[in-house]
Length: 121
Image (cartoon, rainbow, N blue to C red; front, side, top):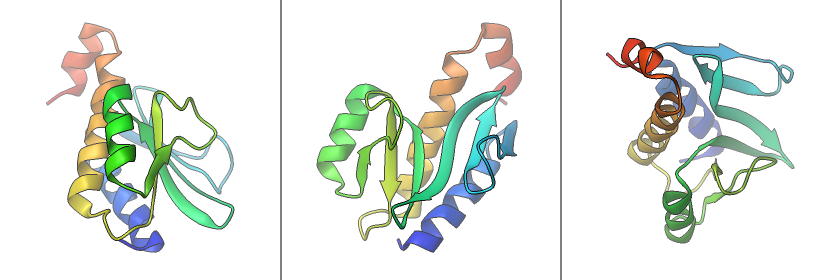
């Protein structure tokens, strides 16, 4: 997947998830996606490289970084709980959808039970 497609696909997939809010709290160059006021994904460009940054379970994060060269520890984020995905031939829509869904789920899992029940269809 190329850089332009990576971010456009990530935006589409994130916005398809229930109760997703798209905002720009860090400026227009940083697209931020939240659920219940908590960030689960961001897109930006750093050093000329477009990226998608999202939450990840620590063990899965390490595994994905070993399997996929285009997945790195989260850029300017907690390296244990965030990953950044860059363009690469091994990145496809299915993998990206899985990573974004896992990030959304991770954020929702951390919310109070009443909010979890409201957010999950």
